Length: 177
Image (cartoon, rainbow, N blue to C red; front, side, top):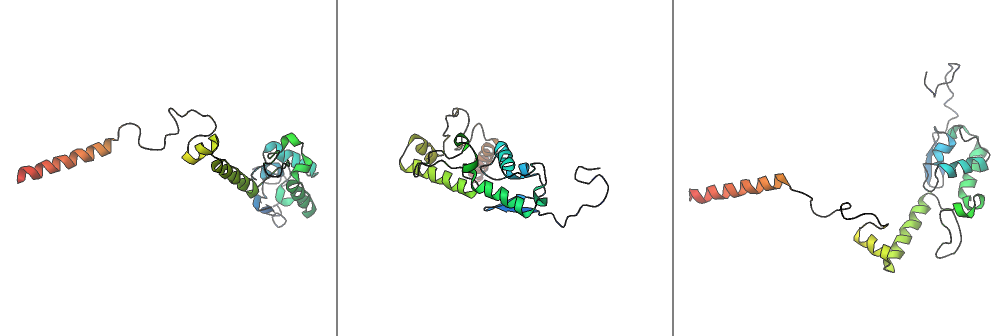
């Protein structure tokens, strides 16, 4: 017997199951538990998903697609106003460069902010911006032996064989003449 089947053997009511729950511009899997489904959203990890479920007064092990509409709305409200519900040190965007506010950004907004930050670093030609421009590693990782993108490392045997065959063919043509 699988974990998804009910223990009494009766077929589950799939009519009340929402397969997708939309929060912002992200579709979350409604067949998973609330905590697990929330972690699919950019900017929300395991710990933040647990805080969202507890703040919204929702059982975090319940199937997300089987929740009532008002419970889903409370989860959506908590996710959209996450910076009001978590301590300042837990927010992922503290002291924003332009506004100076502390917020917690999720979903596609997080990707947009990150792209904007990288472009700003490139424009002011900071050290990290220069590394981003060149496509090199930015955070101090080892580069002597890793991160090589140009050229080939080692010997390309196939290319050498092709060159040898071409030279041999050229020599045979010279001998025939």
